[in-house]
Image (cartoon, rainbow, N blue to C red; front, side, top):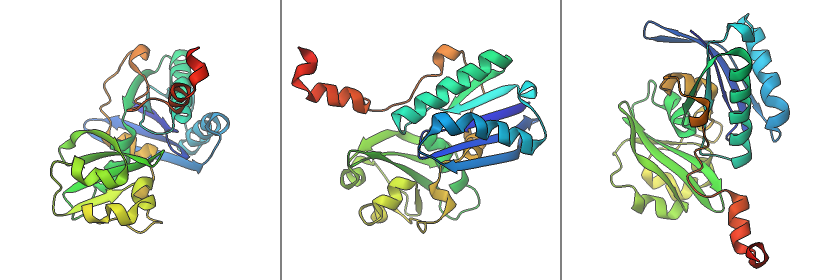
Amino acid sequence: MLILALDSSTGVVTVAIARAGEGRREVLAEISIPSRGASETLLPAAHAALDLAGTNLSEVERILVGVGPGTFTGIRIALAAARALSLATGAALSRNSTLAALAAPALLGVAEPEVLAVLDAKRRQVFAQRFGDDGARGKILCYAPEKLPAMLELVEEHTLVVGDGAVRYRETLSGLGRVPPDASPLHQVTAVGHVLSADLTSVPAREVVPLYVREPDAEARRDLNPWSKA
């Protein structure tokens, strides 16, 4: 099964082409581009990855998309692209958490038995979730970084803390585990991480919806505007 995986939930547009079958998943090509304009770069990146893999869109059987949490606009762009590509090609849809994709490479070949994936949620908050070799451990949290230690029920002695939230709030979160150097690729969400961690069960397009965790920024601004309810 040929898979097109894509994500624009963070400041990086990331696309991968992979093949899955007989319990194995092989990545054929990957492109990740730091970008503030996912609407302009996501589809060109997908076509470039297909070219690198020596295949084309008509051969894709599964489209795997990151549904968040992350930037609200970026999530919506990726979901719209995935649905449109599925409709145009007949490829089935699968979905995956951005935090699961972030944690997946960090869980490979490291001494730490647990990974804490942390994304910068803006508004002085982070999205965070714990992962082990058995998958997610606990729900997704969204709190100010200084409150996160108290909200985690139990942290393993050897935990790897990754993500742009871990980089931004390194001093605050360093007590929760080892934070790799800022330049480490483990801090970046990748489409390869989606390929490694996703449940490839097919889901209908109506179930491929954003995983916002908290209300979108536009809704929060509207709630704070007294004229919005007039």
